[in-house]
Length: 321
Ligand code: ADP
Ligand code: MG
Image (cartoon, rainbow, N blue to C red; front, side, top):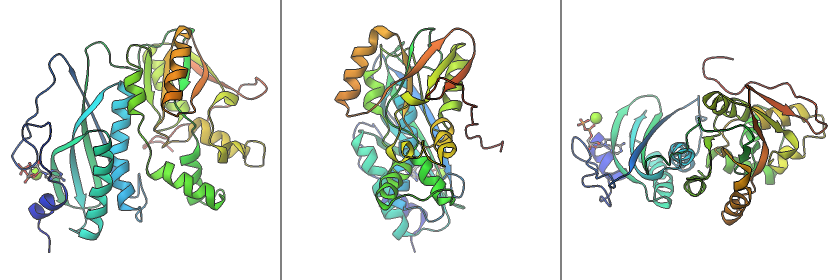
């Protein structure tokens, strides 16, 4: 059988690229680019909580790094390094091989280097800490939104959580949508290039992990402002949009306003940046757009197609139902 250190060597140790010292010593050593700040983020994924027991290991490896890259993207940080803390029930090469493949596929796509971690036996849990760099004063924080700023969403949302609702037997997808949405749910594309492009342009940003109402709510509270968003302007996955005029309208609205797992960016910017941002989204083949406006005050209002206020469904929270 595979021992702990053979497991690390076989699946997670690669020759250092930018790092001074990578996997294998008591610490990794990295040089920070002169004049840059370090952006640091951690996300943990727990089996049965964040993913199903039968989750495909390749896509799981991808996703656990993607959720961290999404946080770096939301900060406008350039991804550099990550560590991986892994609890696995057993040293199963048939699971570890595709898991590390998916992990490194996304890491390589963003020039990210695995520099260390920890490996133990236990219930399947994956925790990644990601490190990125950002010039001082250029990080996209949650707290910079100003009244009259436009609120942007990077790309269509609602799809990942619609697929999750099918898993819960609350809806049935066409085979084409099921395939497409499985991809959105299990292998999201972190919007790193967009986050970098928005440096110096966006006034505030956050990534969508728990649902629009909750995540935009965090941004509004951090910025001490309020906002109105229009349902009809939310870039919406076709499978969700198709449901808006059917008996599944409530589910579709729930997916848009409170659905999680999108990993798109919500950001704000003055209207003077409108053309620039539109061009940036287009250059990145993203079908994002303006979904609303920041206003003085507090709280979030969502308007339906007729301009009436929608009751806001609650976004995901691990400790409240
Ligand atoms: P220590 O006992 O000093 O914590 P470990 O024996 O846990 O070190 O790990 C040995 C080396 O392997 C360290 O450099 C650690 O960073 C690295 N490592 C352990 N697990 C992983 C992993 N899952 N992915 C990448 N590196 C790992
Ligand atoms: Mg250790």
